Length: 346
Ligand code: CP3
Image (cartoon, rainbow, N blue to C red; front, side):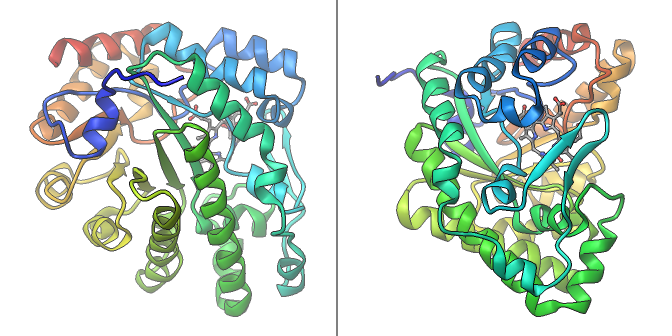
């Protein structure tokens, strides 16, 4: 079914509209919503939820129904890719992801690249179902984790504060690290292409841990692999719209933006706003920047932070969003307050 309504978010990402101010939130489907917690309980485990097209569709739509965001983001996780390569992932309640850590090149060679998209068929089916159910003006975003960030969980077997295990591995086994990144580049291209063909309007590449790297590693493990993913996806889907989000990118953002060829970049809450406005937003659209923790507090503190973000970026192509995912402690009323304030500004 084709719906011809204009999608404000997609137009901003394509560089066609500076005047509209679309809004959505990273991790907008999640534990701060009672309806998410209910569906999550019905699904059983977190991965069961990710691999149920019906329930994944339901939780993707929940924040759209409640807040009318301009984007729906596919409900899944960046770690379904290692899971599909045979490195089983489990999510432990209240703790986070756990994988059997990769310790050497041998474990990397054993990762199975042969049928990643086939094993992720339930996720791709969810994309098609969400597409059919969404209002015509809502942009559907797919996503994947960037190779460095996904690799960092595969090597450590869990989340760590500074990704020390993966950084150590990259010095100790540089060839192994390159091999792992290459495998993830290929899998990510196939996976994103499948999402776009199933109906995603655009895709976001999450590089949550990009900011942990040295200058030369950032080039090698963030910029270069992301550029290859962008080129690889566009070789199959010519006009693919891609957002890159290297958290902690700081002064490397202009170079990342130019060299990867993404259409837009995500900005974390730590970013220097003048720098971003003058040296990043002049390259193309930016998204993000509100500190997720001011959403926990609400009230005047939230209003003030929203206004600082709007003052900094509303003069150029901008997508209102958080600087990282919403946290489970966030009261729903504060999200309502944020959406109302951004919509009133427009
Ligand atoms: O944004 C959305 O609403 C779409 C869904 C989405 C999830 N994870 C759902 C999720 C997206 C885009 C992600 C990406 C993701 N997953 C990233 C990159 C972005 C980021 O937030 O840094 C990373 C690093 C992961 C890996 C991951 N998944 C971790 C470290 C955790 C545990 C931390 C936590 O918040 O519990 C998850 C679990 C996860 N992924 C949850 C959700 C809603 C919570 C699990 C639950 O419901 O029990």
